Length: 277
Figure 1 (cartoon, rainbow, N blue to C red):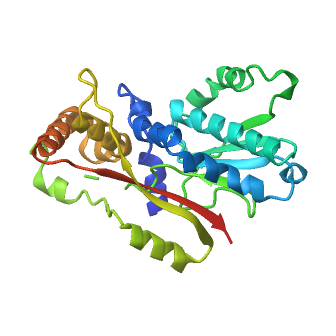
Figure 2 (cartoon, rainbow, N blue to C red):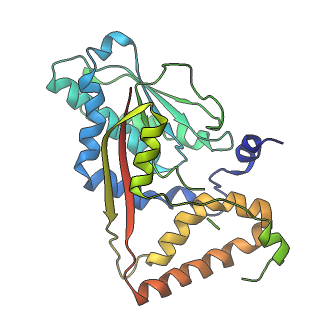
């Protein structure tokens, strides 16, 4: 069986009894709210287009959309930004085709069930000036083609470069769990983009994630464990079984908290905006 088929089968964000939809929400929403260039860079491609309203719907893709509030939060953000940009440059607001992409095992239906409330919130107070927004799912793996040629105007992907890994499993089974994880530096990412040659870097920032910890909220270790679990659970349970998961990530959270107590651990996020050449 090919690599892509294995990935499509097991690498989904599991819902089950564990709330994966909230696991990575803190860092994503922090960027959306507290990083002003995020809004500027989203509006810029539409500002540069001669008249996108003459090109049919503005096609926007969220690659690795997952489930939960962040999916529709991003859609709302980008629509409002494009609306404001269109008003600034005195152009008609385009129609929107939102292309949600994730693996076929992603729970797209849970997103669609939220759409009536989302449309109501999006169009609140706009009267007849409501934007025409169409949301569709494009399930599939990025190991194959997802869209037709020259189909998209804007592509967004957040926390999609992740592929991580005490004695509850046999050593040979642990040794056979081979998941490659490599945290590239800013320079290596820049070099890779330049060598690939299809994109120009509009902006590249390294942002330090400032965590707001409250006494009653989760610890840093619990947040890191939840984020890691959101990405790794399906692969770990596929290889080792579900019975080890709770204890594994509880232990991981405690280890992270112990390390944080020894020294401050900084979390950095790369923010990259690319323009197709």
